[in-house]
Length: 430
Image (tube, rainbow, N blue to C red; front, side):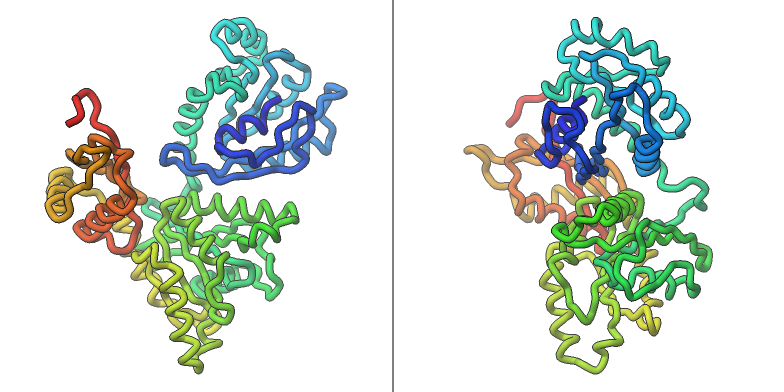
């Protein structure tokens, strides 16, 4: 059918096994995708066996689980094989969901074939069909543009009070995420256990504090990849990463007894892949409160490990005793305001001019790089387009310099800043 081929084309790598024999994908594969500044999680599922032109109860159960996991569904049909009774049955199943479904007819690699092979599928009575060749990329760009437009419209959770701050708690298993939320809300809303892996799903709690509302998202522990052999654990990771996609602020917990690990740093990296504001909590601080040497060592280790995100505050806390928790919410308020702040274009261009005067862009292939102007293109995180003559020639070090100047000049000291470099169109490069 081509699901794994499409999965690999979207992810730009070979994570899923591709084989002409039906049924090669026996388990679900998932990948974090960054498509033109739009992050999302892509899942490749096993195919639905239509050997008897029926869907067994087991297959139906698995299909409904996959549908339940998704915000948007891509349903692939085989344009060369033509419409099958199984296609009709699956479409009827998908109609009963409230999810957006893209009905994709694969193995169509030219406009002539699109006219010839697509027409039988209109018999399904769907509003829109998407012609595609997953192998040869025909129709791929159109499909992705439509998918991104739809993903941008997916709401995190209906019915939340306006201005609700969405906060996801992440970290390795058994680091104290559920206990921390319980300490914050002051009641046993989550199941807390000393056995790692208790939280299998993301759990949301709405908290009102003063005049503000907070959505606290508890997630399953993110294990090291080599230890995620259990299917439920793999989907726990998927849920945790999906939680990142719908939060404003990520709170990553580190175990004070164990210290910061490579997996902690990996989880922190996930938060920045999604452009989230970030707070690091060193939990279980009470266990080392008498060991000053251990405290100094741990703080230095955290500082060294997170030097690529100097804007993220670090708090020493204890979910068990409540130590340090009161300091979290003032930081959250400040971060949230910065995360959604907008700036006038004139102020941004003055800031860009000052940055260029302080440190002129380097040469690129014998020509001077020029930065013409800038404008804000989004929030959450604050994002800015910088128009240049040769965007691809701007070295990472100069990009980092500009990002730091924007952060300092705009007072964005607690959130990530994104700069997107674009080429000036319609004019000769000079």
